[in-house]
Image (cartoon, rainbow, N blue to C red; front, top):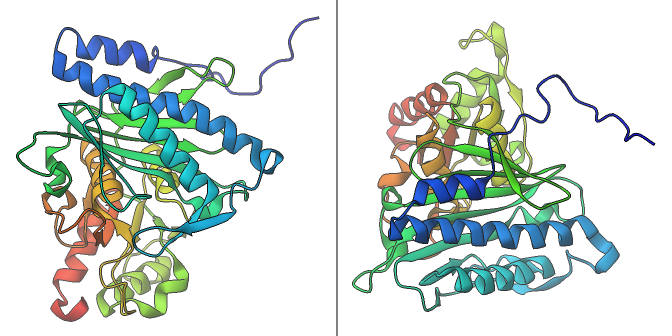
Length: 340
């Protein structure tokens, strides 16, 4: 009996080799590059295991069961702790010197020598069990004993990437030579490249933000949104669409594919002055990928990659996506010095 036809269009199945082959060729005989490649492959090994557990959902226990809280008081679910432990184990074998995880108060000291990894093992864990995307996002930094690699500017990153667990398991990553997208083959677990040299459209009419926070925003951000939401009858002269997934990785993946702008600004609520996203293991890898794909990432005014972290888990406002729109938001904020 012949296999059923696979739904799709004429371009379905187009691939450009495996991520493993790409990294092997890129690294060549360079020991430093080999170290970066080993860590990325370690992340992918863990992601294969994690994707299977996420796909099993409540059939193998309640992934969303609350088991504690992290250093900043955020609730930790069973999947948060399990994924943290999984990545620590595999990154240790892959040669990491240090790992900074959202789920641990302090960096985990390991036995590697050359690179440190900052990671959010499960971004968007509030989506667990709901069928909407969750993800893993990571940053690879050069390591030396003389300084804390996690308290240096994001422009020093050697590589960054993410894995999005949605209706497919997708990877986006960069080693500083453009952004590649890959998808995990569901039978083999191999990540196959589906797009090279990703370029984000400069212009967009798609916004991603948490509209429930609108009333808390500072005046400049409120004015920007007002001008967008009045549509083609307003000053922008065109209609805007809104999307919000509750997962920065999911938003990042969509914006790399089709453009858009995401923002989580600082606002008037106590504790939200600097937004909610973490600089070291969320904003920095996002910004690295944005810059590599022709997009932008700022805290509203300042480039994320130029910021120096004040602590391992410090937060930052974050605006990222299509360059023209990110720059326009900065112009709104700069024109109103009292907005923050």
